[in-house]
Length: 420
Image 1 (tube, one colour):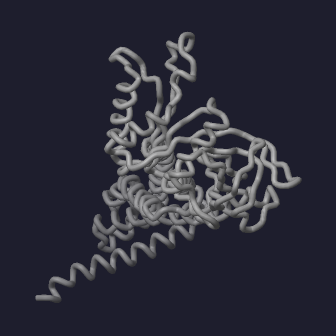
Image 2 (tube, helix red, strand yellow):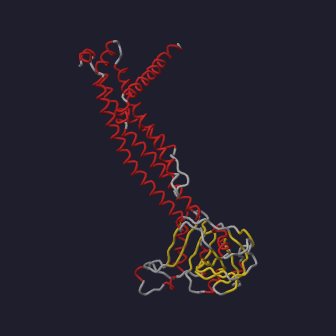
Image 3 (cartoon, rainbow, N blue to C red):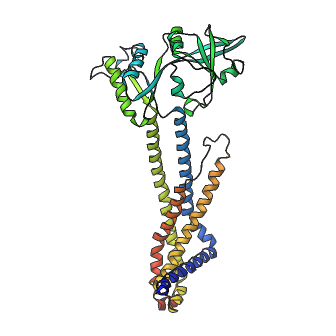
C-alpha cells in the first residue's frame, strides 16, 4: 500500500529533476540568447536589491541619528504669530523660567525639563584665547535629559543655579582647544571677562547630521548665571517625556498650560511652538514607505517587461523545437509532461536571471562601502529583498511561461513531425 502511494510522488520528483536538468541544458546551449532574454529580470532584481539595501541603510542611519538626539525629547520655544509680527516683538513671546516650572508641575506626560539659553563669548585660559565659544546656560536636569556623563569633577547642583555661581562644565574638545590640563577641575578660566571655576568635564557627544556632523568646544554654566550675564538671550525648553508614544498628549498639555498662562483666547494663535523627535521619526518612516512603494512600482514594471521577453523567447523556442515536441509525443509523452518541460524551462531561465541580478546587487552594495566618506556605515541587502526577488522571478517564469508551455502541450504530434 505504501509503495502504491509513493510511486506517483517518486514519478513527479523524477520528472521535475529530469526537466530541470533538461531546461538548464537548453539555457546553456543558447547562452547569449538566454542572457539577453533574462536581461530584464537581471536589471529588475538588481534594482530591487540595491534600492532595498539603500533604503534600509538610509533608514537605519537616520534613525540612529534621531536616537542620538533622544526619542523622548520635546522642544518648546516662543513664536510670534505671522499675523502679529507688526504689533508683537520676540521679547513678548519668550519662554520664561516661571513657565518652565508651570509645565514641570502640571504636565503629567513630562518627566523633567531644562531651560536653555546660548551665547558666543570669548574664553581665555592664561594667554590662550578662544573666540566665539558656544556657552550654554542649563539646569542640573540637563545631565539626565542629554545623557551626558561627567568624566572628571561633578555635575551641576541646584544650589549652583539658585546662587548664580560662576562655575562651568567643559567638554574634552574644549580642553584641547584651550590648552587645559587633562583634568582641569578647580582651574579658572575667563568667560566673557568673568572668572569661572571649572567644576567638571563632560564627555564630547558626537555631533549628528542635524548639528553639522562635527564636534566642537562646549561650555556650560548655570542657567541663572547665564541670564545674569545677559538677560536678553533667547530661551527655549528641552523636555523629556515619560513615553514618546504619547507625544500628542504631552503637546496638548503644554499647549493648554501656556495658552492659559498667556491669557490667549479661543481665536488667538499660539505664541509658542513645539517639536517632538518621535513625530519626526514617524514622519520619516512614512516618507521611507512611500519612496519604497514608488521604487517597487518602477522595478515591478522592469520585471514585467522582462517577463514579456521570457514569453517571447519561449514562443520562439516552441516554434524551433516543434519536431522535437512531435517526436516526444509520438513516443508516448503526455501533454502534461510536455507542458511541465517548457514551464520549468521558463522558470529556470527567470530564476537564473534572478540569481545573476542578486549576485550583481551584492557586488554593487559591497563596492559602495569602499567609497571615501560614504555616509552609510553598514549597508546590506535585507533578507526580505532576496526572498522577494527570487520569488518574483519564479512567479514571472510561471506566469509568462504558461502560454508557450500550453501551446507546446497542445501541438498535434503528426503536424509537429511534418513541421519544417
